[in-house]
Image (cartoon, rainbow, N blue to C red; front, side, top):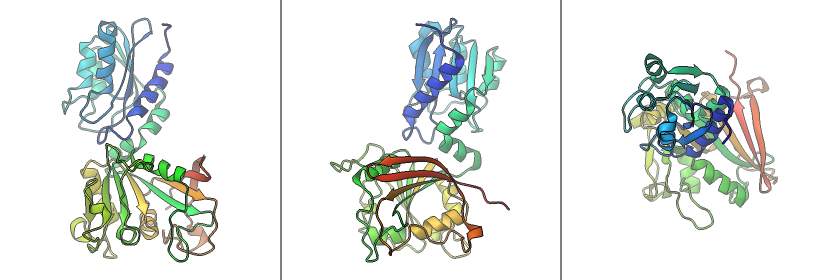
Length: 353
C-alpha cells in the first residue's frame, strides 16, 4: 500500500469519527489512523460506543508491532486519565509511536493532558491539522464541554407560510414520510429530546427514535424531557410509556425564572450534569421562542412543506421579537430536498450587545 500524507490521514480519521455519532455520549466522537514509519496506513479506529475501546486503542490493535516508530493521527487529543478505559496517551507511548498529530485539544479538564504526557515521554506532538473539520464533526460535544450545557438544536415542521397546524388544530401530516424518517434519524444522534407540556397535552407525542415503517424502536433512545412548570403531564401520556427514559422537568425541581416557569438555563445545566451533550427541542412554538429569546439555541433545522394554510398556529411565538430590528438573523448552512419537502439548516447569529 502506498504511503499517505498526514493531511490525508486526518481526513480519513474525521470520516471514521463520524461513525460514532449518536452512540458515544457522554464521550466525544474520535477517529484515529496509524501510519508506520514509511507512512503506510497500518491501523484505523473510531470510538464506537461509551465504555468501549477508544479510537487509538482500536487502531493500535490493528497495527500491532508496525505502530513502533510510526505516527498516530487523531481527531482529538488522546485522553490522559483512567475511566472506564485506560489512558490512550500511555497506550501510544507503550506501542512505541514516535509522533502524534492532533486536530483538536481536549477541553475536558478530567481527560486532557495527553499531549503533555506524550511530549514528556519523547513523542513528537503536532496540533492543528484539519482543526475546523474535526471541530465541526464533534461540535455538540466540544460546545457542551466548553460552556457547561448541551448543544441545542431546534427542530420544527411548517408549511411554506410558516404554519405548524391548520386553523382547526390538525397537523398530521404537514411534512412527508421522508421528512419524518429524517427527523427520527436526527433524534438518533442526540442524547435528549425536549418538548413543552402544551405539546404533550395537544399532540401526545412519543418522542422516541423509531423506524416509521414497522414501528420498531431504535436500540439507543434519547432521554425524553417534558418542560412542565407546574406538573400537568397526564399519568397516561405516551411519554410515560416506558419505551425510553423520561424526565418531567418542573419549576419546583429545576428552579423558576422571573416568569415563574422552568428556568431554561438551569434546565440545560442539569441536563449537562446528567450526561446530555446534544439535545433536540421539538415543541412547541412558545417554548422554542423562550429558548431563542434567551440565546440558548445553537442550530435550527426546519422542515418546510410545499403547502399553504393561510391560517393556524405559527411555528414560532415570541422569541423576544417585537419589531424588525429585533429579528433573529440566521446563517443558512444547508438546504436539502427531503422527499417533497425542504430541510433548511441554519445557525442563529449572535446579537450585538
